[in-house]
Structures are given as C-alpha cells and as structure tokens.
Image (cartoon, rainbow over all chains, first blue to last red; front, side, top):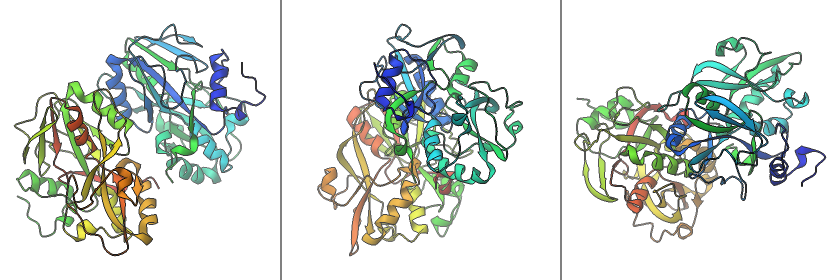
Length: 264
Length: 264
C-alpha cells in the first residue's frame, strides 16, 4: 500500500493506489500537476444524450475521454480502473441519489459508458503557479459549488441547471484569474460570472449545494466558474434509470498533466 | 435574389441566400469574418459513433453544433437550412460517393442528424488580419487537402485516416501562424506538422486528394493543419449506409463570427 506524507507530492498513479485501497478523501490539492476529472457513467442507451449534452454545454461539461461500453479503463491513465480508483462514488437511480460507495465494482453494469469531464482543480494549479490564492485549499476545505438558475442547453432526454464553483479572489487578481483560466477551455475556461451571486440565482454563499462553504478574506470578490458537477444536476432533473458519478470533490486523478490543457 | 460585387463583403445570410438560389462556388474568401463549417449528416442510428469520433479526434473534427434528428436547422444561424444553404453537397452510400448536388432536400431523411464541424477558413481570417499571406486565396484556388497515413482514434464503427489542409507559409511567419492558430482550438488549432510532407505519408503535394494544388512562393514552408474533411475519409473507410456532407471547400457560412472562436 502506498504511504505518503504530503498528498500533493504523490504521482497520479500513487494517488489512485491510495484511493483504490479504500481511502476516502477529497482530491483537492492531491498529486500536484496531474489533471483530475469528473466521472459520469451511464448505460450505453443514454450515452448519446450525455455526450450531446456535454457538446452543447462545453464550458460546464468539457469531455476529456469517453470509454467504450463496459470498459472501466480510460485513455487518461494507463492501467487505471474507473470503478475503484476514485475515493468516493455516488449511485443514482431514476435521478435520485441512492447511496455513496468507495468502490463501484459491485454496481458497474456491463453496458456502462464512462465520461471523464474536465475539472476546475486543473486550472487551480495554474492559478497557484501565478500566486493567485486559493482560499478553500488554504482552509482545508472542498471547493463550494452552487446550483444556478441558468438552464443548460438540453440534449435529447437530458436537461438541467448549470452548477458553478466559487473561488474568492482578491480584487486585484481577478484579471489574472480570468486570463489564466480562459486559456484552458477544456477545463471550464473563463469564469461565467464575477461578482453578485444573485445574478446566477444563488441566494446564500454560506450554504453551497455541494462541497464546503469557504471564507472570504478582506478585499475578495466572488468568482464563479462552470462546474463539472453540472451533469449530476442533469441526472437529478432528467432521471435516467441508472448512473454512477464521482462524489463532489472526490475526483479521478489522471496521468495527464494540467499543462497539457493550456492553449496559450 | 442577392446580387454582389465582392463575395468577401457579403454577410453570412447574404452568402447563404446566394447558394440557396443555386450558385455553386467554393466558399473560400466569402463573407469575411463569418465562421464557415464542414457538414456531415448521418442517420440517427450512426450519430453516436460520429459524435464520439469527433470527441476523440478534436483537432480534425471540432464539433460546433449538432442538430436534433430530422431538424435541418442549426444553432449557428437563425433561419438557415442545412439542406439548401451550402453551395454543393456530396451524397454517400455505403461509403462510396454516389453523387454531388447543389440542393440536398431530395436526399434528406427524416432521421438525419447534422454535425457542423469547425473549418480552417476560420483561422485564415485571423492569419490574414496579421498579414500572413494565404497563397490559395491569392491564386483563386481551393485549399489543398491530403489524406495522411496517420490513423484517427476509432470510435464505435467509425475509423479512418486524418486529412490535413496545406498552407504555404513564408518561413519567417511560421511562428506567427502557429501562435495564431493554437489560440483557436475549436477550429483545428495549431498545425499538426510543419515541413516534410513525407512525415504524414503525403507523396506529392502537386496531387492533393481534395481541393486544388497551390503554388509555393520562394522561401515558403509547407504547414499542415488537421482538416474537417477527415469525417469524409472516415465515411469512405467505415462505410455507413448513408451520409450527406458538404463538397470539399463548399462550406456552410454561419452567423457566428470567427473572433468568437479565439481563446487568447
């Protein structure tokens, strides 16, 4: 079993081994420099709707890989197993969360198609590299996520609201945060909103729908990015018979490097 | 009927009206600043394979829009009709080109799903804006396209080689051409190769597989970009029962602006 002092210094393969062995921890800050992804796996019969929903909502749902039916592997990491290598999974039946597990092998059907979707943790490493502070990391919390009143573009049987992640950014660094993230369109790209959360229909920042509330520092501005939890909100709204996702903040750690997703 | 002196000065809607009325011309240089797209339409039963093929080969096949089954419209242009608004179409049966038409209404099936795919004409306007010469435009020709020996990542029943477009670029402007196009990942992005065409398995630049041979100027270097004709090569290799595409160089002129697809 992999042992470690600082999860940030693990390789992606080492992090996956830790989670495969049963550790359940949010992956924020783990395996620095490696790209983390959101997971949504559905029966093949729903795969086109999911893929089209992602195509039509690329800022929230940038697809980095799609598995072949029944294949628990991914092109994003040689030898990885999407059924075991995430720290925690959510099981969905008819759009209702029916449970969380740390190993999805028992629930994985032979016709499952797994979508790996870009995650804002990727651009966080780029923000950190330029000295933009990340309050949730400093506070040891999961990022805060909110369901908005912005409807995604529907696709077939899938519809639902956009989910966003919040980062408190010092006012004088907001321009940098926009510049850095807009150069990474395959991991959510530029913020969808800066400032008043009510514009997105968010009432109370202290009560996120997913993740943890995060404290602002004086002079911080709320900055919102489209979030890879959006497909989970679509599951809740659209009620496919069965799906498996990551638990929010408990991502797949791939072998891809964050820097591979920069275009500037 | 729309009349015009210079096709570059037409709006996208005016250009579509010209083609809808029956004009068959390559769209290179038309409706300056408006994004042009490749078309591939297949029966719904093949749509997932096409969408997945595009997802797995995003540099060659960047998807800008996908229609709902049977809908000849597109989100890229209000009121447009993909069956009539391109200057020329190709009809494919079992992977064999069975004919070209200027109006696809008679061939359009009620279960057709239309994919609009990014086109290198989009980044050409950005190259031109920075003074990078475009030899094929200057010579009044269609861009030269070649089938390579690079296999695309297969998806379901779809497989085939990557097709590239060639532009002769003055050696001292190659760096600019790379910088400008890599900032446009949704319209093919950076070149896939600069220099020796044999690296891509291209034997003779004077004999393109699609489009026209284009003459180099002294000091020019051959620069190759992944090309939206790649899905047509996949049709030829994979033989789905039926498909409709644009004829190479005869694109759909959308209402989107080229500048919308820049990320820098």
